[in-house]
Image (cartoon, rainbow, N blue to C red; front, side, top):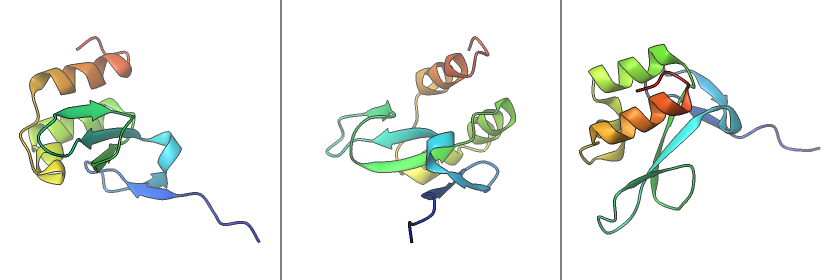
Length: 86
């Protein structure tokens, strides 16, 4: 019996989805910064939807999940990823 998909929760809408469908934001250890997709460290996941990105930014949900301040550049990069142009 094969295991099911690995589920993760969107920090904005709180919906459980397959990890591969979500955007991953990672806080690297030892204050090395925040990156997208690659790396090991504390992670937060977002649905690839404009409403979830806006909710996360407005209510500082990524900041709370990662336990560090999140720069506007990260949100702009996520918006570009979604095709929203920042």
